[in-house]
Length: 111
Image 1 (tube, helix red, strand yellow):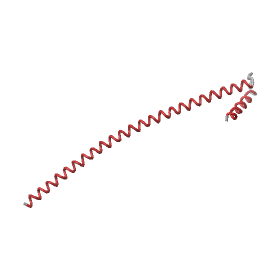
Image 2 (cartoon, rainbow, N blue to C red; image 1 turned 45 degrees about the horizontal axis):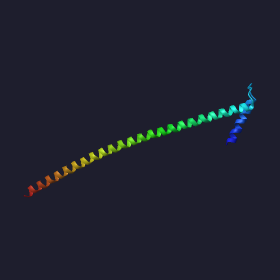
Image 3 (cartoon, rainbow, N blue to C red; image 1 turned 90 degrees about the vertical axis):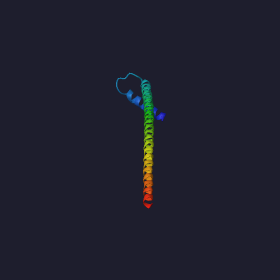
Image 4 (cartoon, helix red, strand yellow; image 1 turned 180 degrees about the vertical axis):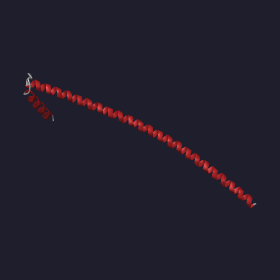
């Protein structure tokens, strides 16, 4: 891979050396092309690192949001469950009381 990149740079340098009024030697032009390629490679590396860090930060942020939403949902489910339990208990008490009243009324009618 490095050989291909070097050949490409060399070709570009030779091509550039045949154009314009540039007084530099082909070696100087090649060195300049290599320096520019290294700079751009470093810039691309930094950009990729920044992008990776941004993605990591966003993933952490989303993870916190998901955790908070799950906790809120669990609290709401707990609240609804408690309310449902209380409603069942009240319904049981009403049914029990109605049944006792019915039994007492039936006893009175039988006596």
